[in-house]
Figure 1: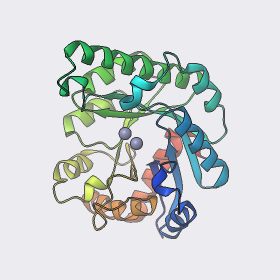
Figure 2 (figure 1 turned 120 degrees about the horizontal axis):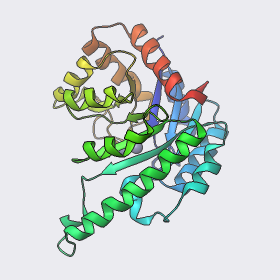
Figure 3 (figure 1 turned 45 degrees about the horizontal axis):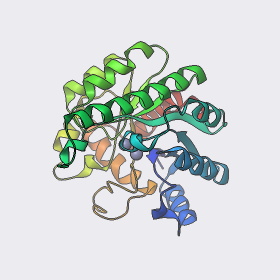
Figure 4 (figure 1 turned 90 degrees about the vertical axis):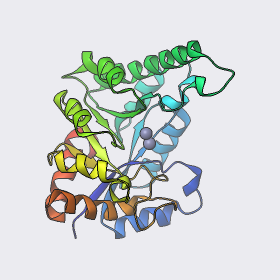
Amino acid sequence: MAVFYDTHAHLDYPDYAADIVDVIERAKTAGITKIISIGTDLASSRRAIQLAERFENVFAVVGWHPSNADEAPEDIRAELRELARHPKVVALGETGFDYHRLPSGKPEFTAADDARYKQKQAAIFQQHLEVAAEAGLNCVIHQRGDALADTLALMQPFIGKVRGVFHCFSSDVAAMQKILATGSIVSFTGIATFKNGQNVRDVIAATPLGQFMLETDCPYLAPVPYRGKRCEPAYVKEISEVVAQVKGCSLEELSKATCATAKVFFSKLG
Ligand SMILES: [Zn+2]
Ligand SMILES: [Zn+2]
């Protein structure tokens, strides 16, 4: 059986509190042999590490999600440094820019609030990159809304030191090429299986093997035929089948390429 990794899961979310053991077991049965649980703030990152300590095939990424940036302290570098030392912490993140929902979407806020919010996201993002560079790790990048130029600009001074995986990639071929040109890579979710996911399938077709990974971003984005239900790592299997079809390669080739890419990107994955 072709094996795959779920390189982006939120196993610490309450969605899995009742049946985490079954979720991990179903992933194994489906051939998903490694799962990376992604932190969204310090408490969530600590929970991700606890899961990595409890389950042999689970690894952790520690960071503070840009959508939660307003709740972050001014400086989280000391905590990130400390957490990144853990042997099963394989990257920093998820971090980046999310301009999808800006404060000015609500009547009580103005453009000045947007600017302040973006500034806070930038400060937190920058701290992840600094700690990643010190620790010799890469970053899991969350980029949503019209934020690609700002994301690449902030990462520019770190080229050659820190690479990013632009997770849940659903932009276009031109954006993908800009990202790959900087040495970063992308990863694809269950959106690839959606009826209205043709734009993502076009990007997958254009992304060379060795430059992308697979993920669920669970509990979100369950692939067809589970669309709309709670997602879980086992469903990388359904994603891999569609991606192999789009790439015109065998599941074995896709397995080899995506797992090798993940082992290089997440150097402590083992
Ligand atoms: Zn994300
Ligand atoms: Zn995520």
